[in-house]
Structures are given as structure tokens and as C-alpha cells.
Amino acid sequence: MTHGVRRVGLKFGAWPPNHEQTWPAGTSDSEQEKPMSLRIFLAGASGVIGQRLIPRLVQAGHVVGGMTRSSSKMEVLGRLGAEPILCDVFDRPALVQAVRDFKPDVVLNELTDLPDDVTQIGALAALNARIRTEGTQNLIEAARGSGSPKILAQSVAWQLPAGPDADAVAELERSVLAEGGVVLRYGQFYGPGTYNDQRLPAEPRVSIDRAADRTVEALSEPTGVVVITD
Image (cartoon, rainbow, N blue to C red; front, side):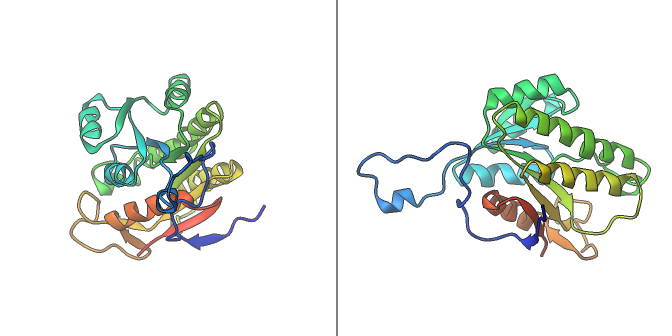
């Protein structure tokens, strides 16, 4: 199957989740046009984009289960409006149970394992490669065990040099597309809380707030690759 690469669309609510919407008799047309509320299992909820996504998703009327492996992040996820879920993506049985218990319409994978010090990215690349491969596969298995909700997953919009990191990104994209999911190819983030909070990175790039806005819009995208850049 060939999957096209496209810019994220602005239309919201076109994609139907794994349940049908029914309207009571007498429901007005304006009420029926409102976007459907989705249950979204957000992996990587405490990350830089995850924390921006939660309030946007909640404001759009969705219910967010925010997964983190750090108990210290549970309180902040609750304040942002998510239902905090404590789980390690590498603990497959626990993850399968957590996703099954939440009963999501969408699994949104924003997981990364990046150091605070940008100069250490290369030295610690194996950690991020593992979460892109093993972590993504565990999420896919968990989704299969919960009625196969739609999967969206973070990727990158720039060319990585040959090596384990590039191989991991390619494997992530193949596995997500094979499930009928959506690959979100982000430009380099910039703005508060990112590696580039004081300067613009090279293109392709995207402000972290714009990336979060476009991710919410991408919930309605059909399977394929969506490029999210400025």
C-alpha cells in the first residue's frame, strides 16, 4: 500500500472512532455538527508536547488518559485536565491492561527518551531508538488488545543520518502505517521548554504550540504521513 505524505488538514471531526455516533430525537443540526468526544490515550503525556496537548484536547471536548512512568508527574497531568495513568511503556503486560482499562478511541504516541542536555543526544541515542521501536510495538500490541483504536505516532520531518536512530524511525513509521495509523512528522521544536527556547533551529521546524494545535487537527486524518512544520 502506498501512503501519501501531506500537510495536516484543518477539517476536524471527519474521522469516525470505533463506535457510532447516535443522536437523540430533536437534536439540532448545530449540535450534531459539534466534533465527537474521543477517549484519547496519550503516551508521553508529561513531555514537552504532551503537556501542551492535554489542555487543547480537553478544551476540544475529549477525555485524555495521560500516561507517564514517573509518579512525580501524576499531579501535573491531573491539573492539566488528564486522567493520570502511571505505567512504563516497556512493561508490556501492565501497558496492555492500562490501555484496556481506559478503552480509548485513539492511542496518541508522543513518547521520546531524550536527555535534558542537547549535547548528549548522540551519546544516548540508543535510549530514544528503543522507545521508538520497542515502546511503539508495545503500544500497538496494547491497542490490539483494546479493540484496535486509531494510532497516531510522533516521527521527524528531517532526514536523519544512517544509523540506529534512522532505522528506529523507519521501523516506527512502518509499524504504525501497517496498523492503519497516522505518522506525525514534526519539524524541530522551538519555543519554551524545548531545546530551542532562545533561537530558531534549522528547517524543517515548528513552534511547540503550533505543533500541539496541528496535532489536535490531525486526529481526523486518514492513515498516512502528516508533516507538521511552520
